Image (tube, rainbow, N blue to C red):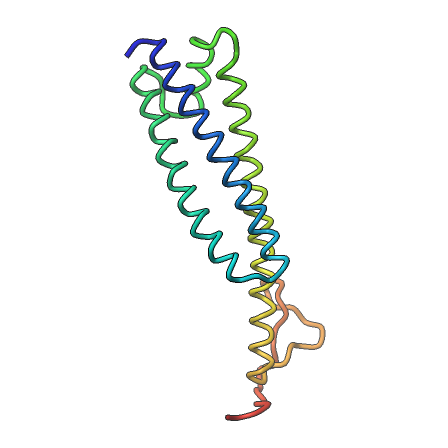
Length: 160
């Protein structure tokens, strides 16, 4: 494969990855908003959209790595850096690459933020279940993992 063909194919893939990563960031923002509204139906629908977008991004990433390897470059960050150094005199691809890396960082941040919200919700539900089971939270103690611990003796609140 010629260097020019490789460069054009790589430009197309980077554009597709950038578009897909931006869509994923939009989905993560929508998910954040749905989580703060406690809208479980929207969260479930968005999860399917995120999974589909992630699958497409993974396919494009594998294609990008195959292109680098076909051009004689390592299929990793170092290979991408070397390719850009050798075949990107105007820096256009490098700018796309940096934009993509920034969008990926935003995805990681949004995913961590949403994961934190889900973890807090899960902990609240778990605490409510423990109270319903008669496992009252300890009055000021924390377990070895930093979580509140319940009383060892159970008192059932009600039976059905």
